[in-house]
Image (tube, rainbow, N blue to C red; front, side, top):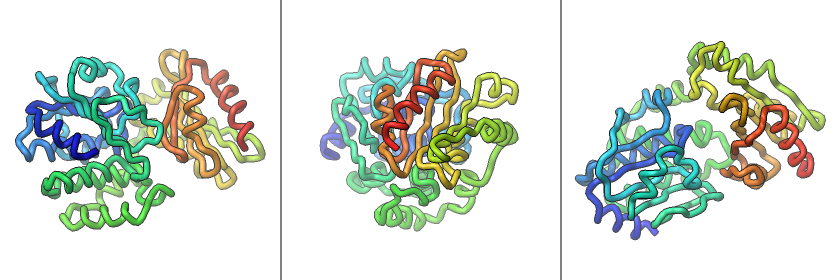
Length: 313
């Protein structure tokens, strides 16, 4: 399938890269690594993000700038499971006759003209690395940094069960370029803004457990976000607080949005397939890490989720 993707790239001149909305480290690292790769072979490339301001992680990525649209002839979607996750930028995808979808989510809908979905990859960053090798594009220190950030983000610093021997082999090759991985890991996993710490405090105070501790849930309201002065980016990773409970078999983070009319749900489990659970609510993702959006208030959404979870544990 790389051959079809490479052919589409070679036949294009101006390319728009679209990460999914609420872009995370894997998504952003992959997108900006790909941008640098394609620029190195003479393509005009922009990355269009849904988020303003840019997520905090952009501070350590190379190639991040406030891009404007171009008269493109190719759109590449990165780390995006379906068209709905493009948000307001879906028009760029729909009006382009040539589209590529590069992803590692098993629930991906193969929505583009050319699709490369490898659900065995620990991160989309692994696929970007392999694409660079296939295209004989040199992975310099900047590209390596972006790919490393992508992979480290989606593997929890190489600690999650999705980390495979190949993941470490790729990381080793990236490290050979000489970037400062210690500083990157410190930024990703051991550094928080004051607003994020305050949000973590609120999330811990909200902790609820069910089924004798097998289910752990934290939640955040829009009012809490406003009172703290937190940005969307500050709420990323709060699921880890529920996940850290030693008795938890499944953990959830429920975040209120859209004036309380809907909630964004993150799910983690080492026991059940949360990708199937999230799909019941129109979402998707991985077996052990997934998410969805539910058109309901926090209380109602929580009851809906618990009803489904209790059938499985």
